[in-house]
Length: 183
Image (cartoon, rainbow, N blue to C red; front, side):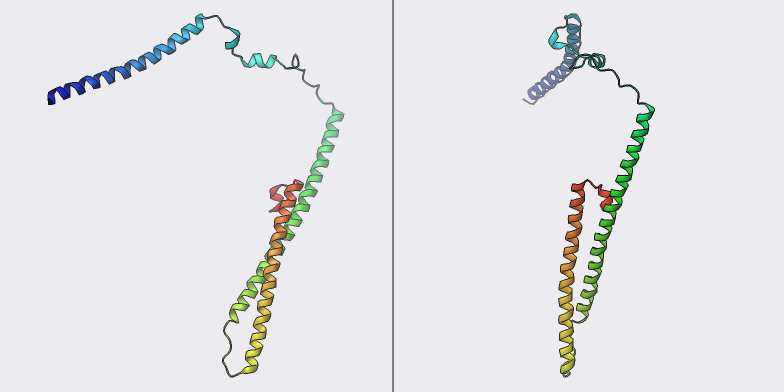
């Protein structure tokens, strides 16, 4: 039995090996035959291929239009002036958006600094003075309440400043301002 199994496996392996090499040869042969067939067959309209030259000579409305005449000197001067005016307008818009963005960012920075300062003050007043001094304890409670109220107002102001900056960025995008102008 073991000899028969080995023989069967050897025959199977040889068959697989032969079929893979013959498939590779047959693929190459098939490509060569197809190339020969295409060379011998007359070209029909459905299998026509177009080259770049064919496409450049063809235009949907008839022959391709001629190139426009070269611009005159007077036109060049006018276009240069228009371009300079566009650049001046663009520079003015850029300065406008940069100034508004800088102002909005400064308001956010100022509000953040105020929140940080009041937060440090509130943390410093968390420990109440020792018992026994009633006036001192009452003053401490009043002072802490003022600090916490100011901290809440500062946080609200910071939120409004951040919201104003975000709305400015949206407004700038809608108005066509470049992203770099708003940074």
